[in-house]
Length: 325
Image (tube, one colour):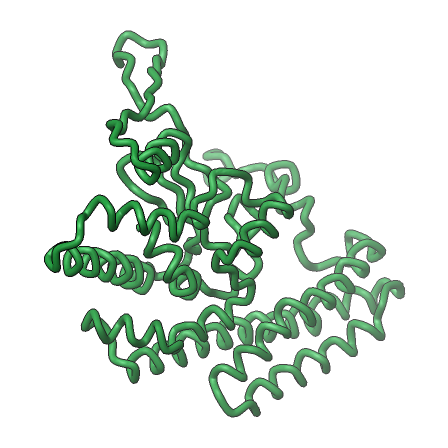
């Protein structure tokens, strides 16, 4: 798996590419878009020793959890917790792909993980059957791909630079990550493993790019409606706020959507959509926040953060049975 992650980290990043992950990765308790793996101190120490010729047995440490109640006896669990800043941490008997978005269909993710793992197992099996020593194969691959193992803080910018400089896969843009689907090494992998033909890879890449674009377009049109139906009328009613900038933003959004429609390929449309979402809409959001700061509460027709976060203290008391008698 260490070898597969290092070789095909671009495919793993492709599998979790989405508009939401362009915001989420590297924040919100999500790992950054750098495909490393956390193995924990025990497993890392064991593999490092094995790589260097040590044949010691792997013996992971455990700790006892006592819930303090008579109904449940104390029980043992792995001593190390999974690293929540790692995209692909080992949690004891299993790996966890933490970079997958909560709304994503995991079928492509599982296809990629199963394919890259199967390819490495097949490669090792062929080499062993050809007469190579299994232990030496494993040791050589660990030395070659060791850079992808990282147990530290993936949020730390110095660590991110170190991983990037060492050659670990890093693709910040979801649109560019999706475009890895049709890279020669990846189409060759899927064809070799009888999973997808190059034509099927290309078709799926276009579909994922179109999905990215469609998601952004819907959000942009919602923002246009919010501007026209709520924010601009509130600013006009209050007589304060960046009215000219807000009215210009409507045209800016509509023009950006029209430009996307005019682009020729799914890839080109998705690139324009990413700029619209991560640059244009973010700037317009800042203008909307400026309006919210100065418009009186009774004239602001959208829910404020204060109301959303503290709904219980900003809503009418719940109805009682006597209200319906």
